[in-house]
Image (cartoon, rainbow, N blue to C red; front, side, top):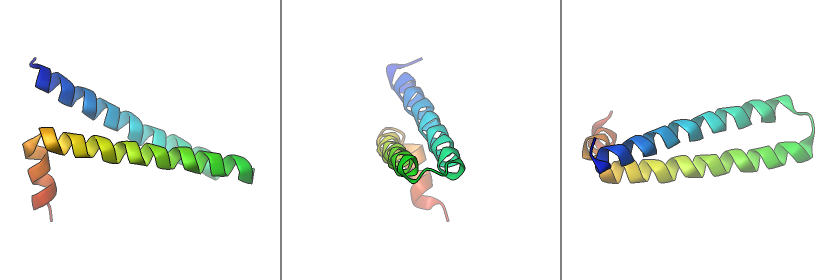
Length: 74
């Protein structure tokens, strides 16, 4: 496997993990009754969303087919 392919695989796996983390935080947010904890969890969830955006920008830069799909998708 080329280094470029390995890097894309790393980025995609990281993207998967960030999306999973968002789901886990959301479940915990909805389960807790403690407002202070909820605020912390919401903050953490939103940081994971930022990570998703950063990874998608990187993937789009290095995977031209993926980038094209974002541009062409209706």
